[in-house]
Structures are given as C-alpha cells and as structure tokens.
Amino acid sequence: MTLPFPELTAEEAASLIEHGQMLGCSGFTPAGSVKAIPTALAKRAAAEHAAGRPFTLGILTGASTGPSFDGALAKAEAIHFRTPYQSDPLLRKQINSGKVRFVDMHLSMLPQAVRYGFLGPLHWAVVEAADVTPGGGIVLTASAGATPTYLAKAERILIEWNANHPPALLGMHDLFEPVDPPARSEIPIFSVTDRAGSPICMVDPRKIAGMVRTQLDDECAPFAPATAITEKIGANVSEFLIAETRAGRIPKRFLPLQSGVGDIANSVLAALGESPDIPPFEMYTEVLQDSVIPLLENEACTFASTCALTLSPEQMRHFYANLDFFRKRVVLRPQEISNHPEIVRRLGIISMNTAIEIDLFGNVNSTHVLGTQMMNGIGGSGDFTRNAYLSIFSCPSVQKNGAVSTIVPLVTHVDHNEHSVQIVATEQGVADLRGKDPQERARLIIENCAHPDYRDQLRAYARRAQQGHGQLSLPDAFRMHEALLRDGTMKSAQFV
Image 1 (tube, one colour):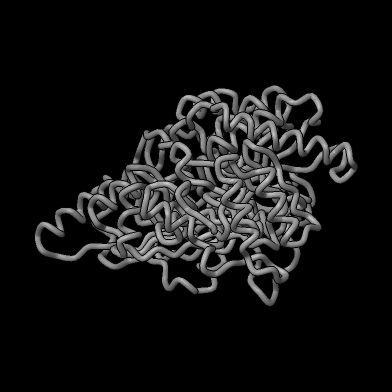
Image 2: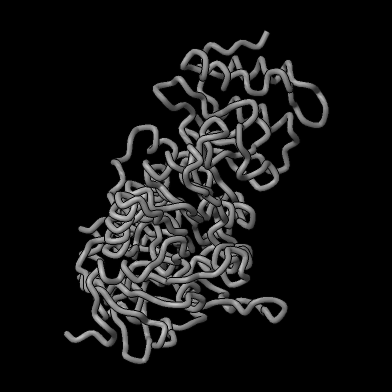
C-alpha cells in the first residue's frame, strides 16, 4: 500500500529531530504508544553521546509507555524532561537521582497546559495511527491520550502507521477538545454512552513530515494473577458497595465505575462482576485492562468509556477479531475528557484507586516511597478522587513481607488529602470516613484497616498525639518510617 505522505525509515524520521526539542507523543499505559521512532532516537542519542555531542529531548506523552520508548530513551540517557507519568524502572532511577526533570501532573490537566503554553513550544507530534488520509485525517490506535492536542499544537508531525491496528478502528474514538477560556462552555456528555466529538483527528497535511511503517504489538504486559489478599480487598469493596446500594445511598441502577491500574483494581472489578447483588454497570474510566473484556462479554459491564485499551497482545487480538461486538460497547476519549472533573461530578462516578500508604487522618500517598522516591506519578487518580460520588482507596495492610505497614500515623507525601478520601479498604476491612471527625477517622482506620501486627503501635501513637481538632504528635509522626530506614522494619518503632 502506498502511503499518503513521504515514507521514511525510523532512522530517517529520528534524524529530523534536533537536540533539545520537545516532543508530544501518543501512548497511554502504554496503549497506542509510538515504538519505532523512539527506539531510533535512542540509537541516535547513543551515537551522538559517543561522539561527544549532547542529545536529549523533552518528552510529553499521555501516560506511561513501554520498553521501546521510555526504556530505550532512558538507557541512552536521551531524556532531560518528562511529564506527566512514567513507569520505567531505569527512568525512575534517573528521575530520583535528579538526572531527569519530571513534572508530576493530573492527567486531565496536561492537554490544556500544552494549549495554554505553560510547557513551552511543542516542536514535534510523534503519533501512532491505524489509518491516514491524504487530506490529513488520522485514525488513532488503542488510545486517545493527549494525542489530539499534540497534533493540533505541534509545529511538525511524524506518524507511525502500525499495521497491527486495523483501519476499521475508525469510529471507535470520540475526540473532543474544550474551547479555551473565556469562551469555554459545558462539555456535552450527559451519560457514559454520549459522544461529543469527531472519530478522527484532522491536521494540516503540510505539517506531516513523513510516515514510518510498523507492525508492532503494544507493550502491555498482563498483570499478575489475583492473590488471597487482593481477592479479599475486592470482596471487601464489593460488599461495601452492595451495602450502600441496599441502604439507598447508591441508586439501584448503580453508578458508573472508575478503576485504577493494577492487580488490586482487577480483583475489585472481578468481585463486582461476579456478585449477583451488583447490577450490570457502566464504566467511565481512563484505562481498560484485560479483566474488563470478559465483563463486557458477559454483560456484567454494559458499556465502557475509556482513554486506552491497555490490553495484552493476546487480548488485543481477541478485541480486534470481535471489533463489531466491542464497537457498540466501548468508546475511546482523550484524557482531558475521560478524566474531566465536570463529567466525573455530573455522572456520579464511583472512583476506585490504590495507595502506597494511608494515614490516620485519611490522607493518601500514591506516588512517593518514604516521601522522596517517585514511583510512577499521580496519574488520573486525583482527577477522579476529588470529584467522585464515592472515592475509594485500597491497598494491602502490609508490604515487604510484613516489614511495612501501609497504615501510618502521617503519610510522607500527600497526593489526595483527607477532604477528598471517603473510603479506605484493605484485606482487613473497610473504613467509611464520611461524616467522621479526625478522632473517629483514626479509630476506624486502625481497627478496620490496619494489620493486627501494627494496631498496638498505631493505638499508642494516637494516645500520644496532641488532642486538638486533629491528632498529631510532631516528634512521633514519622517514627515508623524512621524505624524502617534504621532496622528494615516498622515493627521496631516504639511509642512510649
């Protein structure tokens, strides 16, 4: 098939990009990520560095990418700036060592930050496509991410035409960008199934510098099987939502669900899908994982609005083999819309996300280990949590074979504060923080969610804490974390 724009090799495309430039790239956990051009850029960077010349880039994506993108560029030390989210181990080390500037952003805020000019000029959009028309129409692949904004704002465009994604994806996307203030009006999405935009991105064809043919799977690895702990967390969340429905605090027809990424999220969705007391539900979320596909097929989930199909290669092939079925049940939106606070509040989303640690006030740390070491980023969890009908955070009560309690006196970094977090769930139980003062919150979190090995310590801390409106002991707040650093376990912390 003849391409409608100049055909380039990945190396030729990479040669057009200059040191210091800013790239806006498709890809969202890591669905729809470009792969060939970043790999070629990494090889070019390595050659430039070997010759004693600098070559680094600023990289914007939708969210995380895969080994052929963040992994390859990090290995080549080719990134000097990265936002809004990443999950590559080597890139994480470079961020935490200060070699790479990383800006952690709410995913819904990134596209408008680009449009507003807050991140400077965007030199290139490098995006993956399932189809391209001579007039500049681009059919995206397995994600929408921030790609429409990058295509609109970039000075020039490079396209990877990936034959693994069929042109028949046309119609799966709903690409809508709000008008910028002061002319912005409401986003016309009033139900999960509504569409507000275009199925295709239209760009000025004069900006397209060339196209690279590829046939590469998305680098979405399947998540680990459920464990007894994640299954118990899923059961606890499911039982809580059933009780809320019976009490009339959730409508009998239920409400749309948002689910974060990972093993716990999969277990929660599995428990909800298997429960005869949970009616068929819709999802308004940012990521669809493998676990959602059978829920759609057995009609436990009737419709899913998402930003990305974060499916394993095997599950992606199944999805495309049954595209007519899924086309009626799935829509792909840009992250600015999938995560938009206006729509989350309007639809009454039940948000379900995971935490690194949770404190006795109900504050959640979802990004930093011991307050300093960035893991991946806040992602979209804040977009949903702050505006949800119900905001739920889950995690195991202990980590590292029991050496770490995830329930602590005070989190070392706050991503979601006590005013936004309503429900805390571990395998031990559920703490409903709605309408509770700080003393009541502390008691519920300790007794319902903390591991039995740590409850006495946490009770002792609460007794020592200054009795004001909040319970805080400045000398003791990080004693458990100090014990972990000193002794390798939080169990040695003492409150006497």
